[in-house]
Length: 468
Image (tube, rainbow, N blue to C red; front, side, top):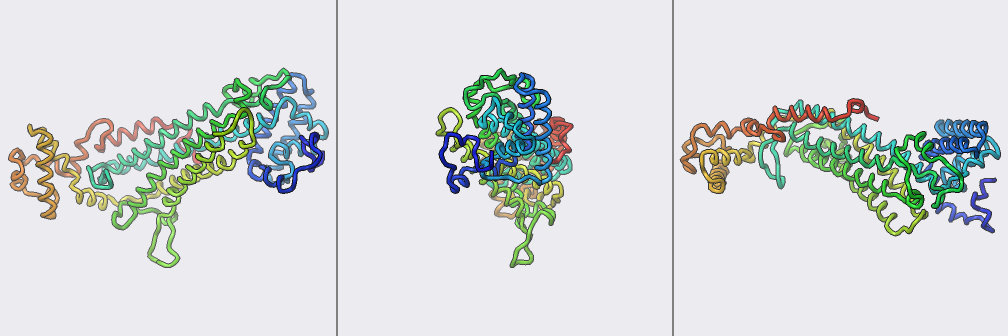
């Protein structure tokens, strides 16, 4: 077979038009599946030898030929041809060139339909494992930052208004909790990715007495997909991964948004390393948090890929349709985008500097202990709604006096409620406020340290230091 002859060309009187070839080819992007394709082909050939379709020596020749092709690809010494359409036919053609007519036997009892479904699952399974490892490394960075800043006061916000004081460490563990859920979701998705479609052939199975479980075991799949129609046409696993990946990016984006605010001179809560910022082409004083902004922007890109995958799936009847060729570019770019974002975010956070004084001053400016004063009054027997009104009046007075609640004189506070005594100042300090929230999930420093310890225990020990 020459490169201009299609494997399916016997039915056709003419070759595809050149523009059609360019429009339908996928090898320009699906060549990154080459390793998975060769892995699957070797497992398939070994199974064909077991059932007697190939002789043992034929299998050895095919496996050795595929291994040599793999080495050429790894060393960028392999020529890809768009006239051969895709990664599968490029490798099969190269195998026939390498070992002769025997190479044409490899495709027995399979179709490109189940072959590509297998390749994508193999590739995505590896990508998920790598992403989970790197998410876990980022989680470890957040845990370490939480432990280091367990006593640092930070204004907790609702509606971007100062609400109550929290600790910086508590805030970091909130970020970690989001990513921990993402790791759990990825592990859950992996379980559905890790099922073998190979052996389903084009859509109905094959007449050969194949051993699908043997192939599944060799490739590390937990199970085979029961229904051949579903096996070749299902891309739920890609959509599901895209959904989780979009959530990962959403969580990174939320954190990046806060970083952008925190580095602004009006806040000055943190200082990012120079290596993770850029400057202005016209304003020499600028130090821009471009990495955080790009992560925030790339979230829209990730969400777009999710939409693309959903849309490509929505109108397809059973079984395989060429629409499924459109799953790869969104999936590939999505994996690259989330992988790179996690890595660079981790590097940036590992070198961030915290300005504890500015954080504390911001918490003081927002009357963050007002709720503590209301709770104090409730413990003295005042109904909460009355306490809420009393404290509101006290805050209004403090605003007009340009004073913090803790700096008001006791006699001034008693004008709003005679229930207030000199022990009130124990609850009006920022440190007293955070220390009082001393329960599981609270922001008290000792609770932050305990929560960081629990978060560390949840990290897989083998993965927590691994960055790929």
